[in-house]
Image 1 (cartoon, rainbow, N blue to C red):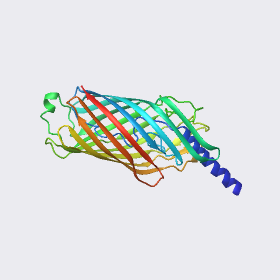
Image 2 (cartoon, one colour):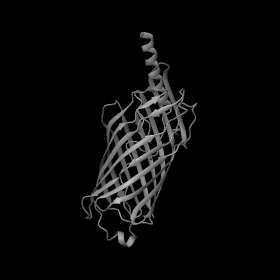
Image 3 (spheres, helix red, strand yellow):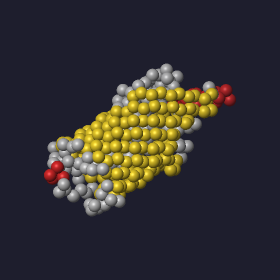
Image 4 (cartoon, rainbow, N blue to C red):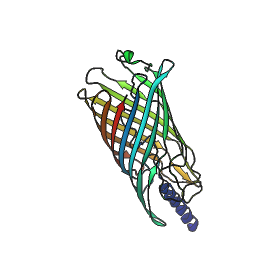
Amino acid sequence: MNNLKNIMKCLKVSSLVAAFITLSLMSGGSQAQGEGPLVYPMVPIGTHSLSLTQMNMASNMNFSGSILVPGAEIESDITAINYNRFFAVGDRFAEIWVTGIVGSVEGELYGTPIGTVSGDTSGMSDPYFAMRVGLIGAPALEPEEFVKYRQGFQLHALVGLTPAWGDYDDDKPLNLGTNRWSLRLGLPMVIPFQQASKPTRLELVPSLYIYGDNDEPFRADSREQDPLFVVEGHLIHNFTPKIWGGLGLRYQKGGETETDGIADNNEIDQLGGDLELGYKFNNSWQAFVTYGEVLSENDGSESDMWRMRLIYLF
């Protein structure tokens, strides 16, 4: 009986090792500690935007924050490029965007039956495609209409897709690609509190992530993952017309993985937060920097992250 228990224990640890060595970056886009502020603006239709994001994260989770690996130390450096187009669907405001991600990841997992497992890799991660459509308080407005419009509560429907197109090799201990597809369903909300020269707004985004199976994990046959529920919020205030600051919170629950039919006992249950500071150079250019970390957890998760983003509207 004791031998059977020892075998099952080794299998569970082995599945955790397999989870570690297929850690990947998910765009959705570069979601370590969340998407960040100013992701769901309302702008005139016909507008386009480009953004460049640089991130560094140290944690015991994969870069997207979707897989927890207790006992791991992971360092990720990521560059993400994002294109957005704003248009009309009937009389409703709509947006599509595409995110491409490149970067590098290195890490170690300690205390396994086979000793310390380590790896590093660089290249291209899975891209991210998404679309949102206004449901409430988000009409499609031409530039001359937009400047006269007083924004109120806004509710949008969001669908995101992450295809398994990133670099992946099942012989490598670390990969940037996930080797699985994922679907995101969300309801982004924006609540402006005042419209003066120093506005304040709350961005709130509940999302559900649904994952396909990885049928080629390292040293295993298959890996499944439960859906992950995430709610992210940002309270943003303009101190001057050009300078703004914000506070962000992000709660995650779920996402336990199962490798070859054995639960990895890594369900996520954590609250993360960040501090945000931005500067608007003009009507086309702005930039911000954020620092975030895990504030409270019931899962042993650890994380801290720096993010810098440059945004261009045209």
